[in-house]
Length: 225
Image 1 (cartoon, rainbow, N blue to C red):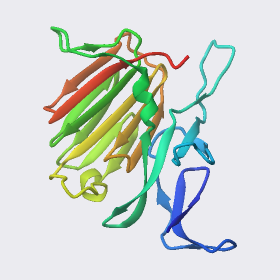
Image 2 (cartoon, rainbow, N blue to C red):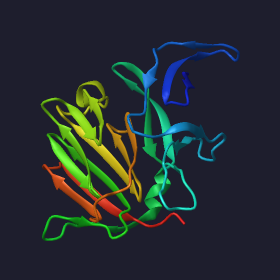
Image 3 (cartoon, helix red, strand yellow):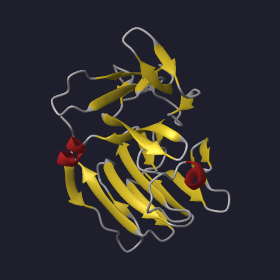
Image 4 (cartoon, one colour):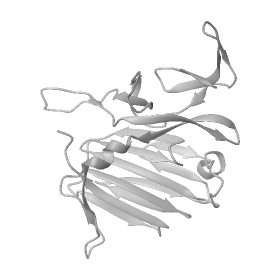
């Protein structure tokens, strides 16, 4: 059994715990590559035995609204075995799929339209690609092996973060959850977690793809309320 010592900024250490003393067995490991997210809280005694986390989007200010700040989508945390040792993964809870509305399809212009702007996207690529959602581009450059979104980047994506045994060279597994003012990026089956707070500047609602996905599926999301 391994234990995780977790910090508000998203860094963590894996180690052992004897009931009184935590002994770290790793250096501090980064889990968050986004421009927000702080002070995440987890649920204790969740009915399905999962470790579910909800994070605060620090600095998520909505101009002109009578309120500010938002919480992210609930994610399930798991420890997985990787070549570098045990690591945390973060993936949306299965219940998010209950919000799926119509499956999205491209129109003649190549736009996969979602009138609400709310989307759940799952894709797999084996080369460079870009997905633009509501005007925000998420891209992967195979020669530099780097995932990018806004001013954020994750170098060594498939070299350092590809941990499943069936993965191919430059094999990128991607999940995107898109809300009205956020895009939550989960890559490499949850080993890379990139929550982004952003207010879209484009009036386009939907997504466009550059590149050839091995698999791709997108659903518009209904409101959780």
